[in-house]
Image (tube, rainbow, N blue to C red; front, side):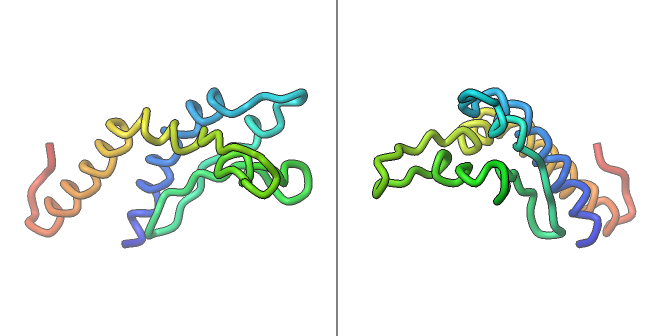
Length: 107
């Protein structure tokens, strides 16, 4: 399972470029510049914003009806656009794991 962290990060990195492109640029472009990949052994993660300089990433992505902010879903759109690429990364990870168990090589 520890080997999955590297693959999860690789899959998340596929989404970063398109998410940065789709992110609203505003006056400074800070939101776009803040998009980055992260990973654990269980998941790849796309992060945007931070608490100090870009605290508005969550409301931009998911919306905030109480403040009349509509969701712009740039990270989710980027994940959907690149789905074929990152699913291929996961397919290779699974194939390699199966090959390792059976002592063969994956394609």
